[in-house]
Length: 476
Image 1 (cartoon, one colour):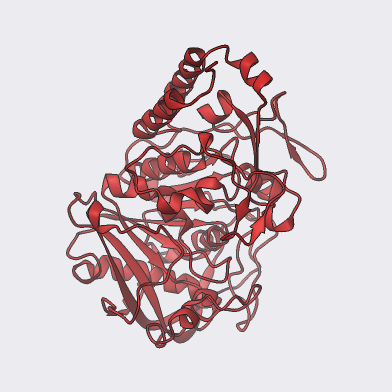
Image 2 (cartoon, rainbow, N blue to C red):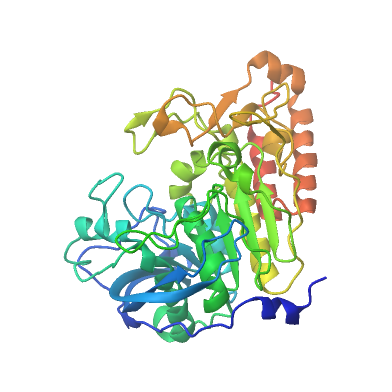
């Protein structure tokens, strides 16, 4: 077993992260721009405020090529001035639990989006987390490839965001460190006086790739964050440096370094494992590493794309029984099949809850068996006779199914990461569930197992059971 002393000796000594200047709260004109939930937070005891931070950011370079094991040695290199934004959501009536979730905002759509806030906001608000979204990347502020959609901050509100300056994504890692340092040093300004005890960094998809690079190269020096939730990464990582700075690409397969001094929980969907390359980057769980692969899930699903934006937590929202969704991207694309309606948001909330406890030195989350994958080109997830995956984290949606839930199966390119939901016909449902009571009983058993193993929180398990009881499954 690795001792704490030998672990710390394996990592570089921490270097001091610069504390940026804070401007704000910003009051206008207009409102903060972010693809996120759409309801007012105030009735739920939360306040939203926007701030700008400004200073000098640094790039990182390595003296040797980056290795696949993630044990990178990087040093600061060039500097440039910057000004970016933080969006803060903090409890005002709910008791603050001491943890700030800091989300690396996603820019895959050509604008800032907060997919992990959307997926876990009901957990965050009921448990008293504070949340900070960081505009860490150039596209979110200034736009650019590959989409050039003119939905970036300076385009949607040039007056409010006209002062922002981003020197390029090579500086994004230090920007993210400085955002965390600002939260730690200036809670009276950014958090209304709340005292943070720990910071958890989270990021989904493209942002998860940035976090892998941050963990491997920057965290050993910065030591700003107390844990990381890496959500839906592929097998590689983001470049350590890129144009207009000299390029330093990550290896095609990049692991998360296994000598970390803080916990990292990686959460993967079926799409991520076989669709965007995570299979090649699987690694054993370790002292501070866990990987959860969730059966029946897609990279983007019904909750994340549609339902979660309006879910204020006052009604039990279980996508299992909702009408099928085929229209995506604000109605601009209609998929050939209904998109995935799986349980990802429930498991992701449990993951964030467990990570927060782990960072408080409570018991580590349980290890999970991986999804069963048949080798080949391309590799495919092995499925049962009903079309659902073997292995992975199990929930009632896959163990007591009313549909085949998959992270693949679409034919349109725009829909390929949204997965599919293929509802069972009446004959199949009747064979599986002779009556409503048997269906509800099976759901209750499955939720009990999932709670005991740590895959679901009790409050979400209760919502799943209530939705099953109110459903028409098994009624004749």
